[in-house]
Image (tube, rainbow, N blue to C red; front, top):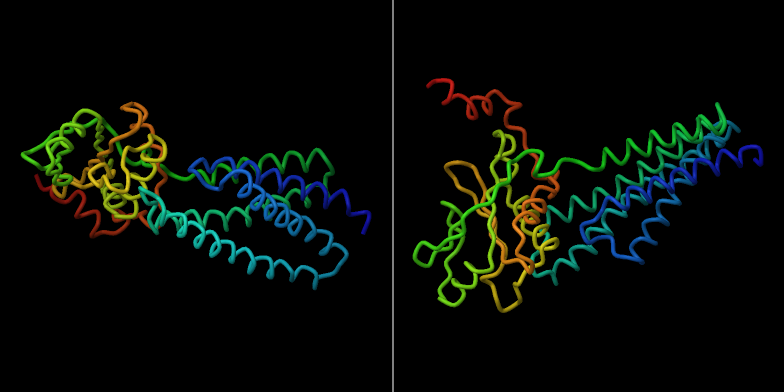
Length: 302
C-alpha cells in the first residue's frame, strides 16, 4: 500500500484545498468563523481522503473497498439535513429572515460541495498515478477552477436590471415608484422613512426572470441579503422598518424598500445584484410553447 501513498496524499491535499476555496465563496454570514469553518473543512478532508483512496482500492484490486463510497454518500446527505436544521434555528432569531427556500438552497450547496471535493481528489489521484506530479497539479487546478465556477451560480444582476427608485407616500401608503409597499400610520415614522430609507426597482430582462423574482422565497432572499450587507434599523418593536419586496402585477417589476444603517444607494444596488438566484425559484416558462406565447404573443400580434 506504501506505493500508493503519494497518490493518496496528492488527492487528499488537492480535495481539501478545493473545499477551502469553495468555503470562501460563502460570504453570506454562514458558515460562522471559526467553528463552522473547522466543521466544513473537516468534512472536506474526509471527502477528499475517500476520493483519493478509491484509486488504490481499484488498482490493488480490492473492489469491495470501493463500496464505502456509497456509505460516504449517505453520510453526506445527512449534512444537508444538519445544515437545514441549524439554519432554521438561526432564522428564528433573525430580524430579517432568510426564508425556507434560501435555507434549503444553502443546505443543498453544502452537500454538493462534498461531492465536488470527492471528484476533485479522485481525478487528481488518477492523474498522479498516470502522469505523476505535473499531471496531478494541472488536473487539480482545473477541477478546483471548475468547482468554484460551478458553485458560483447566477445572481439577480445576471437576470434583472436593478435601478434606483423613488420612495414616497400616497397618503399613508408607502410607495416604491408605482408599487404599493405597506401602510404606515404614524407621521413620525413616515418622515423618518423618507429621510433614511432607500428603494430600488428590480426589472426582469425576460419572462423567465419575471417568474423567478415573483417567487416569494426569492424576494425574501433579496430582502435578507440587502439587510445583511447594508444593515437595517429595524428592531423587534419597529415593524415599519422591515425590508419589503413587492411586485407590480402589470409590469412584473419588483420594488424593494429598506431603511439601512448606512444610506448608500450604490451599495444597495450592488447588494441586490449579488443576491443568488435560488434553485427553488428558478423558472423557465419560455422553454414551453405556452410560455413563449404568454411572453411574446401579444407583442407579436401588434
